[in-house]
Length: 245
Image: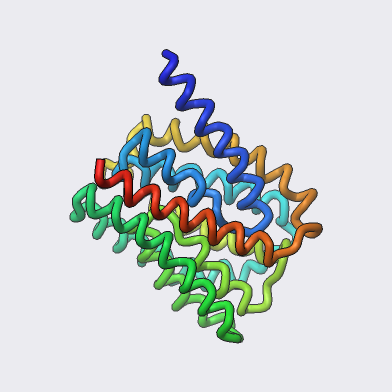
């Protein structure tokens, strides 16, 4: 009973913090949660739980920034992303748990130089480019738990900023998360327990997202980017270390 309380309190608190941070910079929600989820549920169960949690978090961002969403971007992104995430999820089931755990950790760490490189490249994307972005991100999303940080430079390169970026990225990713959840359910990975766990954690994330609206335009973006790089580094290293025990 005490263990269940500690687990619930830990994930609820992290969910709220992740919701605030993710609501401000557009990603990071699942990055913060992943080490704790891997510890409590294991790497294989973490993937579907994260998918449900991210879905709830995206719903909250869509609600908050509804009027600023670019629906054309969402359509073209989903056009490539939905079939790609199904392919990625089917790839996932053929991998062993230790490999998945190490991949998650390494992937988070690699996001740091990748994100910096892409931010330094002054991309000017057109709408149809988002189909290719969707294919790339969709496949990765099917295999690993989070790709929000890689999404960021593409959506910013299209010209979306602040509320428009937050809402459009959330709405675009939602279709991929639905496809991912449906595929996991078909493959037997998304069971009732994972759904309930993801939903409960997602509710604490939603509360954090609502709180974040008040601060989204007031804090320096660069400070949050550096903070998120630190979070990605710590989370990635933690997950890799967990694979050794």
